[in-house]
Image 1 (cartoon, one colour):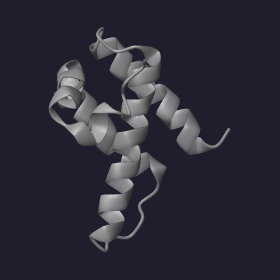
Image 2 (cartoon, rainbow, N blue to C red; image 1 turned 90 degrees about the horizontal axis):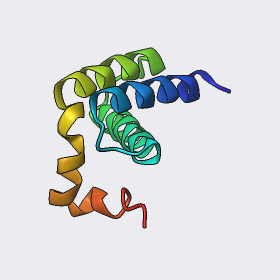
Image 3 (tube, one colour; image 1 turned 180 degrees about the vertical axis):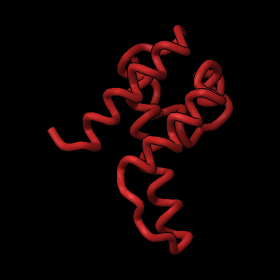
Length: 87
């Protein structure tokens, strides 16, 4: 298991702790989406890659700020809604 996978698992657990409305699958999907979006946006901005620990720090801040209500976001954003549908 690589470092990114281990970090994603930890962040998924943290998100589940602050948001009882998410299933484990949805929480992991959210973390993976946030992870890839952050790294892609950071790269598009021309920034140097700072490693998975930096991405972890940013996502942890997002979990602390928005994690409890992140499930409400998907319903308002079709870009993510289909990715988070468990049916």
